[in-house]
Amino acid sequence: MNIAWFNPVVLMRKTIVCLILIQILISVPLFLPAYSLITELGVEVNGEKMAFTDAQPYIDEQTGSTMVPAREIAEKLGAEVEWNRSLEQVSFRSQHATSLLTIGQKVASVDGKQVELDTPAVLKNDRTMVPLRAVSESLGADVDWVGERNLVLITSADKAQRSTWIWDSKLIETDGDRILEFAADQKLTSIYLRYEAYPSQVVYRDFIRRASGQGIKVEALAGKSDWIYEQNHIYIQQWIAAVSQYNTSAGALEHFQGFHFDIEPYTLDMWKINQTWVLERWMDTIRFIESEVKSSDRSMTMAFDIPFWINSCTVPGSSYSFSAWLLEKADRVVIMAYRNTAFGSNGIIARAKSIILEAATLKKQAVIAVDTMPSTEADYTTFYKSNSSLMESELKQVKESLSLYPSYTGVAVHDYVRWIELLNANR
Image (cartoon, rainbow, N blue to C red):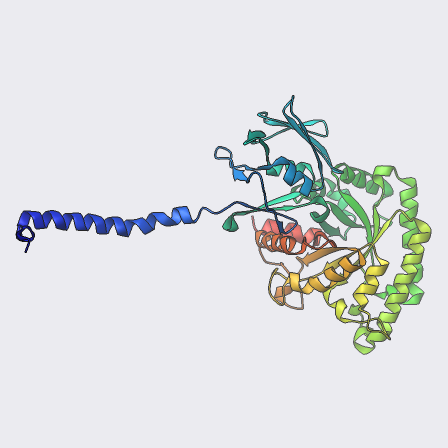
């Protein structure tokens, strides 16, 4: 037997040592999560995660900017990349812009204009690393940060479109500056503007020219549910002719870029009585519109607003979905997926998915729309009285999930007036 264990002094020392060891063991788990939470920085382009081979993206410690390999990210966004070794310059060329970055310089050239960078391009392990946001946005892409997933979401320009409706065209005369300021803040790429006899053509020209200067396309908007009645086709003909005449007299930057139709015949009482009859009249009306548009101005695109559930209707006398038939006639559809959550069986993504797939098969474009107006159907159909940041969060998830599909081109919020009210209510 070791008598030292009975020595009070020795026993006290051993007890102290044991307590210290226990404290260390207890304390270790408190520090381990700090290391386990450090995960690889992920980058997704159009919903597809990128696998970087030679150099991994990282976050610059001083500025917090995400740095990525220049060639891999630019080529993924459809840009051509050139490296000038003697000048240590990397250039990106796309249909949206030409950018030039110089190693070590915090100023980039975008289409000849000087743009300040938070972080300069650097050489790391013989690879050119560039600030992701600056390069992506110069190529027209949209960049989002998902902190809880340590993930950067990049959406290419062709899938990052953002639009809204302006039904009260007088607003472009009384509130034009505010609309364009709002458009810049919300990164709008399109405005669906109702075209009427008022305000004057001068007002339309001024507004559209200024919008064009901000890179915003303006489409001529109109539509009524009773347009499906043959006796009302004259109003369609007159409206298309008026828009075409306006474009003929306006300058190149003052043109409407397309016809945008919002015809909702399912709101008529007849829909409840004889749905087949309404669908047949609807088809006749679309054929009439198609003929009039082609004969008036072939350069104009044609878009239809359609409800997500129209996919469940079929062309009378066939099993072909009515939404696919509409897609065949249009250049683009705006799917009114009026829900206030992205996921779930009754969410925006699930409701829009069928038409997105049809559009992909038919090689047509589709925009996902949400609503900010009060609804008599149910609260879950609108972001009215919701939170603008919540709406943007849900739209971000829609964008990530659906940008994988070639037909998806972006989102639209109905409408401008209510969207403004939603933003103001949250301030």
